[in-house]
Length: 451
Image (tube, rainbow, N blue to C red):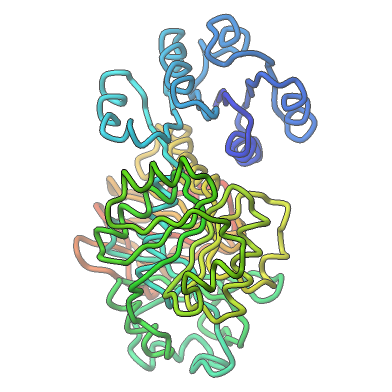
């Protein structure tokens, strides 16, 4: 598949890394020659230096034969114009990053009238993810499949957890209808079997219906109480989208922002939020604004380092729920050893949105393409949702009689409104949604999980 990526900033570079790793033919367009040089030296890609919205530059990049053009420059307008030019040149599909809140009401128009195949807004999607985290304070992350009928949650086991020292068969003995589908222990990742023994310090990833997950969390002694108030550090686009969602949930919001003009804009647009003009990294200011008694703090400045420091301080004064925006890969494993709560990465969210679409286009002849994708466990495991559109060689066959590739786990089957935590006697049938967890990063069709 031939893919052109316009804009090689943080999001573009992250897409380039993932898509080139999956073996697609990638061309990167950027105005900065050093950026192009870095992309060529780091990945197996072709680089074109120039304005990605230019007709001539797109021709040089071969957009006329591209299967997909993805425009992720810092300008919404340039991204849209890139896609319009690409469609005229003959690109089969176009994807644009559009972040401005003023354009949200026009997304349907952009897709239907301007011919954009997909519009991604990482800030809005990040806000949705953070709102989910705040609605489930007992979990580190909580992702949804099948329009919320099945969820994937991450928690960390502590010494006093009833699961410490227990094998996974223990869960079925207590009628807990969830499935532990992945475990991270130190630097090791496991797709566990029923005999796997859990230990304190493990990060475990669980699938189940929302009701079953809440029952499991309560069994583990984790607090299911609701957060009533949130302090948000930084007043960017994510904060704007998040505050709108939290206002609807009746959560009290306090936003601390350094830029006075931005404070005035937020005061105008967010009627229920309290806007504080000040430095969110100032410990005295944080204490003055009630950090010690806050239900949650969300660090959303433009600097990862500042977000990490703020979150570490919030942890030291006992804030119950902490969410930290981190976009850089530079911190790697260091973050695992820091008490900074849940981590959200807008660029990872973009990849999670775009990868299923790309894989579906690459497997257009198949009928059971990936619908939803989450990269979990530090990007080393994928949780994928497939929609079974027709009967195949694996439908109607008990799972115990199918030969799966290594490190593949069927983590759930959604059949209508029923959520099935599968055993060997369960089977997949037409119209099911199937959730698969795997360490294999190249699955584009449900049939790919079989030997």
